[in-house]
Amino acid sequence: MEKDKVKQIVKENYSKIVSNKNCCCSCSCSDAEEISKSIGYNDEEINNVPEANLGLGCGNPTALGEIKQGDVVLDLGSGAGFDVFLAAKKVGENGKVIGVDFSEEMIKKAQENAEKYDYNNTDFRLGDIEKLPVEDNSIDVILSNCVINLAPNKEKVFEESYRVLKKGGRMFVSDIVLLGELTEEQKREEGLISGCVAGAVQKENYINMIKKAGFEIKILSEDKEISKRQYQGISLESLKIEAVKR
Image (spheres, rainbow, N blue to C red):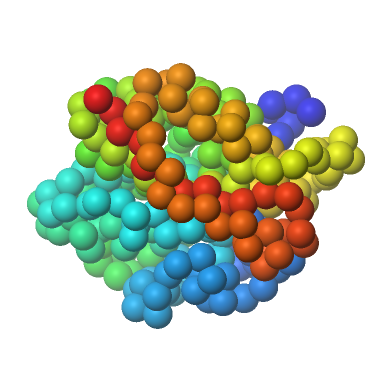
C-alpha cells in the first residue's frame, strides 16, 4: 500500500478516536483505563489528566525515561497529551515538553487539556514525525509510545530523532514489533494499519534501523503477553528500548 494512503488511514482513524474516545492500538477495544494499567501506568498517572488517556499505548515510556527537572522533552505522536502531561510534572516550571502529532483533532484536544489543567510548560505542534518541527540538538529526552510502527518511513523517524537530540540525549521507546510474518491480507487491513500491527516490522529489523541512525541501544524489556491481551494472539511483542546519542 502506498505510504500516503497509509498515513491517510491512520490520520482518519485517530481523528475518530479523539472524537469518540475509542481505542485504536489494540485489536479488541477494551476500556482505556484497563489497557493503561496492563501496560504499566499506575492509578495516579491514569487520573492525572483522564481526558488525555485514550488507551492507545503499548508501554509507559515516562516511567522508563530518565526525566529531570529543567529537561526539554519531546513526545512523538503525542495524541491528546497523556504522556506529555506526565513528563511535564517531572521537568517542572523550568523545563518544557513538546508534543508532535499529525492529527489536527488530537492537537486541539491536547491544547484544551493543557489549558484546563494549567500545564503551561507544554507545547503541542502539528507535524509529521518523519519531518519533525523541532530544531537540531535541542532535546534532552524523546518519548515514543506505540507510534513509530504507524510511520511508513521508520528510518526517517529515527534519523529525525537523532537530529533533534542533544549529544548524550536519550530516546525511550515502547513499540510493537513482529515476531512472525503477517499475511498479505493482514498487511492491507485498515483496522490493523491504524491498530499498530500492519505497519510493524520484525524485531531485528526495528533494532537495526535505530542503530543505523547512529544510536547506541539497550533493550529494557519485552512484553510478549500483550499479544494475547490486546492483539488476538498475533505473533508480536511490545519492545521497550533506550537509545542514546553519543
